[in-house]
Length: 336
Image (cartoon, rainbow, N blue to C red; front, side, top):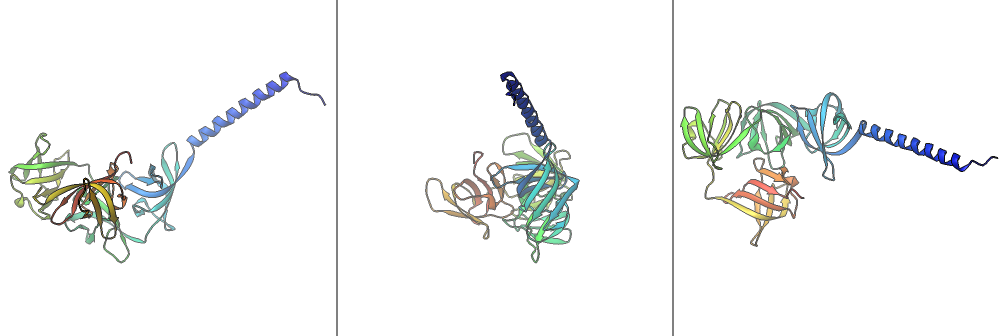
């Protein structure tokens, strides 16, 4: 048997290295342009733009486009994007290059799906109507509007809603809202002329004049109201169409002597009772606040719900000292 020369061995080694390098690069291209799988929970759904965000157990998330050809099943039955509920367990297969879902397989509680336009919303009671259906919301109702987690305060009369309701109840498990983009102004009413209201913003920016339309939802001191109930010098929080300046909702009453704020650390969270307990910074007795669907919640600089708040998180809460109902909560931080 003839022994290969040193030069022949070097040539063979070079050919092998080039071949392995070519295979390695080809495999990399195949991965970047191929398919991938993600398993987690449904974080947000944008029915209008047909987008879904899936969050993994490690906190990472992927937003996927959902096409008409995407195969969707929930609890073993074929369905549509609107059939999926927020917090469903889900596995998604998708095209990496386009972040487009090819298949979504989800599981969750058995629910009834109710869809339609918003007829009325009560922030105080948490009741809203979709068509002829009166639904109750609470601290555990997760709400997504145009793909963003929001509170009941952001739901407008021009929204189209999809609600998922557990069998045998009228309490919404979640709400998927699709509506026009909106702007918000907080301030004091300076003038009222006809159905036009001018508001001087609290931040000192230029005054905003909005129009009250037939579909404008008005609340005064947490009770349903009308244009006639609004007064000059009244503190208001209004949401409106930035193009037409027509108001979606106006909440009047503003701050009172009962409004308070606490900053501290989360001591406890009770999702069943809908409460969060806070240990105040600097000492003092713990404060337990009531959380409902109208409470605006941010967790780690992102929209969240009571269930996203964790023990030990830093927290700042605004609340009514008489009722102990939280109006706004910021928990965690951008570095958490």
